[in-house]
Image (cartoon, rainbow, N blue to C red):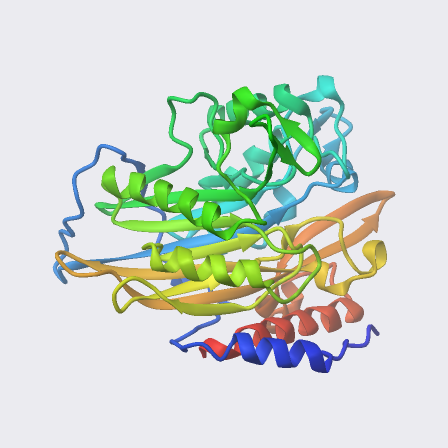
Length: 416
């Protein structure tokens, strides 16, 4: 049995202070069938929102998954020696219903797609088989965020090829672009409502105009191809985000969803910069904020938005899938993730309303069978309620899964 870790006093004090913000209704769900089917269309030139329903409004659910960190054992697991190809779909089969039944879903692609010629690789420089995108698309992901600290892992060639591969397989990629003339964000027409999806990652500007990303240099002639913020300068960071949000609104966006790659790795409380920046983003008109990079879960809160609105902020969604876990990095919290869902009600000539916010806990199962690795992203509540559906789970796994459920319960106390 794996003993549950006690939350130390300092963590509880920090958490309770953070969650003392204004509360709104919050809901966790283990029922994937409760969400509406996807109705996503490309629509940057679509007409303004005009809900044509008997009720006079439309409800739209946006889902987000956390960090996709493909260590070598994950692509070993996906390899089929007979076809000599990689198939990651089984790793996501249990969470597929939770993602594909949202109206639109995004996830953080924290790897590069530089092709087999570069050699597939893991930490510290990631290069993953292209078929990870096929698996994400099959699972229900529509958009991948790419403004993160692994963007330059395979150099300039990997930067551009990642964009080409994702787009070629039919997904949107945001936070980066291949040409200055392009947009680094997308606006999607969902049920007649134009929703903008933005993504920013941290980077350190250098004197020559280039950008240091995780110690790797994005050349000066490419510095405009990634949406970045300076984690040491709040005001310049706010200015960069404000400019992008204004541009999206000028292009017709009626809802703004922002994904941020920020914070301190393995820290379960957002740092001061995260909190200040989140507050400013909410005041700029964002309708939801999803965070990644710490590789552990951080609290979910509501912040005051523009006007009288409330903005859900998921400071960190943790690892959606990775090989980080108790046995590999001595941190049980790296096994945990969260699928975020925010459901908006949009009525013509009225401000959008948030009907409810969900935090669906997930846990990464790792096994070895027949001399090969097996990985599964497990929906926590469903596993606790229907253990028979998950034949690879043992007693110790269920203890960790219960601990994951408890962790998410603690991180969402302030908005229940």
